[in-house]
View 1 (tube, one colour):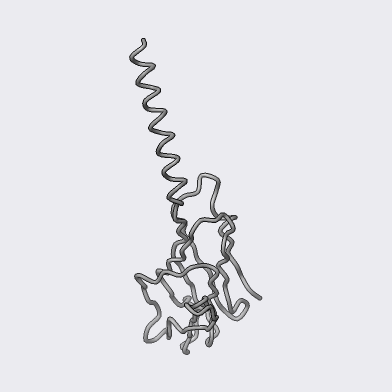
View 2 (spheres, helix red, strand yellow):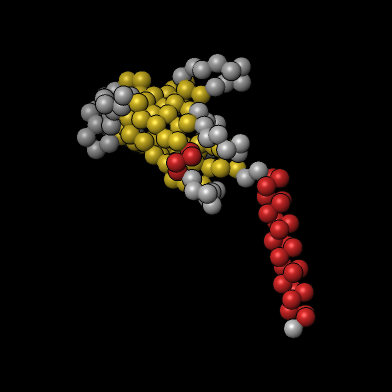
Length: 148
């Protein structure tokens, strides 16, 4: 059984720049997919924390990420090896992944919790158009104030 997250359902029309994200890996769900959105904007998955659940057994839990590499191949790469008695949690900084991304629990029963942020990068052309519209509105407001 796979769990998945779809950008289009998480971001409203107002489109916040970042949204919190998380998933649970375990015996019932060995993988989690963060899908690519079809809004023609760039998206990033910023993975921040991987931790074992309180009821995880004292065994090795290996989490891997499967994302397209520079040559277009998909190969799972282990990013965390956790054990409740030695290293129950890790904090990551600077791990930015481009969707679609699949997180896989390669070994261990879990539960393992992953959390981070989903970031939408604004399109520069759209941003510039919006700024120009705001400037035009400001100039129009100033003209109205001067006419009064």
